[in-house]
Length: 196
Image 1: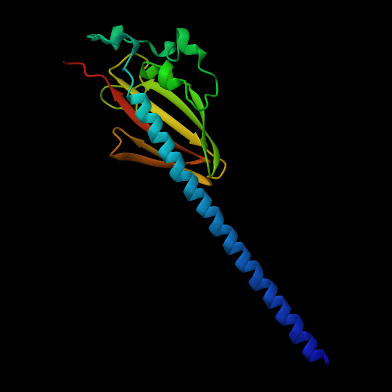
Image 2: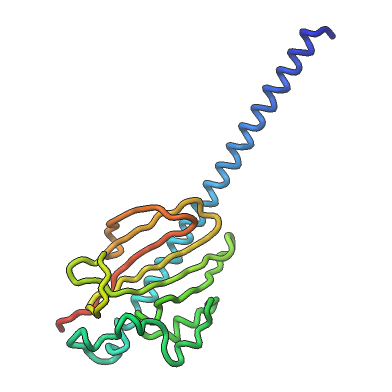
C-alpha cells in the first residue's frame, strides 16, 4: 500500500466520520423538536383544563348564591387566595386535585400550584395568578376591585425549549404573543355580569 492509497483511506474515514456526526446531530435535533412539540401540546391542554376549572367556579366569594351590585362588595386583591378550609389544599397539589372540590370561587386559585403528571412526559408544574384588571383595558392591572379578573396560568416542563406566551381576552382570539423559557403562559378573563 503506497502513500496515496493511505491518504485516500484517511480521507474516506474523515468524510465518513463527518457524515456520521451530521446524521447524529440531525437525529438529535429532530428528537428534541419532537419532545418540545409533544410537551408544548400537553402543556397547552393542561393550561386550558386549568382555565376551564377556574371559570367553572363563582366569580367571587360574595357572589356564591347571591348577586353583587357594587365592586366594593368584591374581595380586595390582597385577600386573594384560599381562605378557611380551602387552605388545607397542599402547596403542590397532586392527583386527585383537591382544588376541584375545595375551591369555590376564582380568586381561590391565586398563587395556586399543582403538579400534573403525564404518562409519557412526566411532571408539569402549573402555577396560577389572579388579578383585577381595568374595565377599559384588560391588559392593565387594577388595584381596586373591578368586574374583571384576569386568570394567568403558567405551565412549565423541562422538555420545552423556548415557549410561547399567549394573551387573550377570550379563549378564541389571541392578542399578543411573546417568548419565555421552558414554560407557556395562557391568560383568560373572568367577567362578572354587572347587570342582570
